Image 1 (cartoon, rainbow, N blue to C red):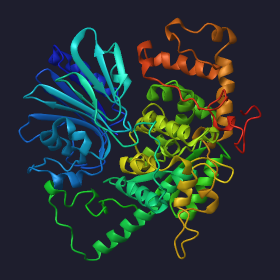
Image 2 (image 1 turned 180 degrees about the vertical axis):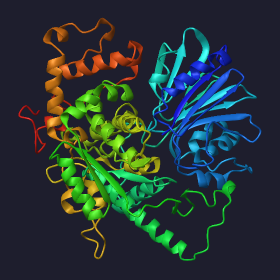
Image 3 (image 1 turned 90 degrees about the vertical axis):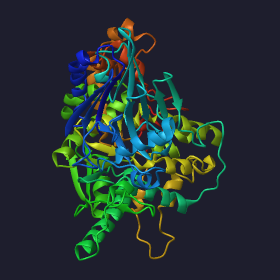
Image 4 (image 1 turned 90 degrees about the horizontal axis):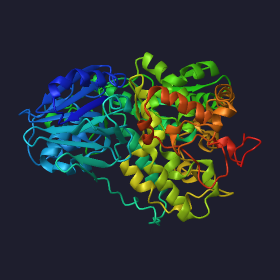
Length: 580
């Protein structure tokens, strides 16, 4: 991940520059490798870089050959080699960065440029001649991005990867909507991402194709191994992260074999960066090329002593042959980090904070080992209805509507958690389940196939797609007991004592009297538990009240549970005594 800060049409941009650099520095944790800025007319673009592709030459902001177009990007463009090859007009690139393709795409397609991108991204592009700023965010909102305005400079528009760079200068801030593009020429946001599954009322009826489902996820993981630096996988031992790890391990072993063969005397691939030859990424044949392979794929898990996830993760790692690293944290470690976690998350949502704290701690350890990028399993539960509360869906229409709602809101929950928990330490998380090609397939499957029944566990079709028991001679992807393991929410899987400890500590910090008298500035957004109240107090220590409008609480549907934990649902194997 990188960090962006930009301001379009500041009335005194040169005087504002020291402030802009200070605000950009507030997101330097996202991109500790290099800092850059460009001023043109009354617009300034600042960039804090985490280098993963185009390491030597890809410093930002990037500029066009004539210096007319300036670009600051946070993200990864997985189809950059295909774009380089498929442009209508010749374009000479200054770098090998995957993100530079956005400039010629804008020159050829204007506002439609984001439609051609396959990846995760937020960008701000400035066209000097037109005095025009274009900003866009990836289809699902995997990368965090915000837009702000100030009543003191009514003609200016601000952009940043995180709230903390905007609230000192903006009195109105919103989360930049995923799948949208902003044009300063009109001041309007337009939705460019228009998949066939967007309308929740349109219930799909496409028959299930298990082979295709497997192939699309494998392709998605393959795309996300595009890197010039060491990478790894987050492995909780649950279905989603284990499948990602299994596919990544297969691809890593293939890369290792190819590299060894190349070293043995194979002809090197001729390099022509302008057409994408010799660069990292996937090519026309869906084959990954990368200059980095690890002798062993590194996998990582975290938990309290005796945590369910660490035990399962170790079993998966042993089965796959990854080099596994277990981090054990204490309740005290987690509690000590809470305020910092909330500062980085920029949220007070209970579920997000519970799950982010161990992820935040683990990310620090991973970065200390020299790893810059990890694959993670977010998005599967929303796409396939994997949360245990989905068992209460009354029919397939309601089931489908809920999956669509969950996927659309991922940028406010799991994507936000994955992005900010890792980027707090300059680590990048990539999420294969949210590949737009994979989503186009998975979200169009007849939802009857996804329904949880007495015969079908949650995410049955995903499990079945990777079940090789009826394929003679096929290498299994996972051990059967992992492939068919019950869903465990990350905040539960790290150790059931973690959530219990949070509740107990909230009782100490928040009194009954405080619950009866919430802060007036909270308006209608009143915490309904002491734990939620405690998190809101910590949020308020870091951010002014107008930042709260960007936060959304994660609440299960069709459930009477008062706690968002999976253990609050009666079908959980380790349910609470009060489970609904």
